[in-house]
Image (tube, rainbow, N blue to C red):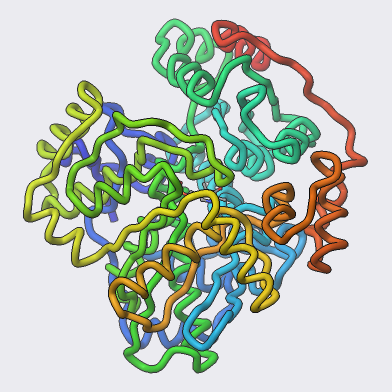
Length: 495
Ligand SMILES: *Cc1c(COP(=O)(O)O)cnc(C)c1O
């Protein structure tokens, strides 16, 4: 299977090339030429398999240039017991007869980014060999919190890779910061930027497009790549857990034969929900794809009206990983729904760049309406939802998951569709202790790791051991740079 670019579909790449490059040269995103379909027999066979084996079966359909043995060893390493604290890897909790929660945060950093970022380094490292690359890849990441730590943990001590993460000095939570500055590994670097997330992101993009910098690094034996969610190697591992979700529910008799499952996803960059869409396209009986946003509701408006408009107030919320105004992965959906029209996609993206706005044509809008439903949730409703699920079902959820749980309620109330549904749970409640404590009626005492103990005492829920151990870890990275010093920081790192 070959890969094409959403902005130029005359080009063809192998999977290894697409994963190594991350982004196509003209700015488009890589997409498989066509999506494989799972037959009924294949779906049945998957039900009896472990998560790791399901990953091999599904990923091998997309990665013809990777052998099954390779994929098996990657899946065992990425999703093994040293990495994930639940043998099911992505366990499904049933909250009531028709509502399920897909927990995607049992990996090393307690956020759903681990599901893909534990796998991507294996795929990327193998891609170097497959494409005859002899240089060392340097991954640059700008993070608003979860991606940076998950990428560091995934790439630490992987041969022929270095990774450097920039985070906004005052823009991440105390726990997220501690997770990053205590990162272990001989090939990692972490640096604070005096500025906000946009400053860090802009700095990284500037480094990527700086030809002088690129050639200087090439001379030293390095090339730059990205681990952010536009890389196909991050989207693909996410398809696996939606197939796995359906397998578990069907195997356990919680979903009848032929019954469709609605899926509600707390959405930022549109990568997670896009993977659910691909699982549906592959033949998994998925009903509506419900897109949940916080106060930054650019996607809600888009999916309801067909107008994408980033010219709006940016809100900082208690679900920071969804505080996003440009959802990059939407581009892949637009390509498919336009019938593979690369010129049309290019047009929308140029408009987004120049005016911050575009409107899709009616034929695309009709498909969006049929596939998706969208809603957004404010801060108070988010906390109220955490409180209610905790009180009524003794289920503790984080702020991102609560946004989705609330939007699912909106969907059911407004459409009357009360069929089986799953919420994607994207972070452990222990990553956002202060908001979760307040939601369940406690007053946070202290900051950062101190609150982990308090939340544990109040809720009795087990603490992910890596978060519990954070307080006693050595701080390794203390550097803060101005925005214009980021290039130099990378040069120093790769000396
Ligand atoms: C990244 C993230 C999201 C948003 O996922 P996208 O794939 O960007 O839509 C939601 N919740 C948490 C906790 C995250 O870390």
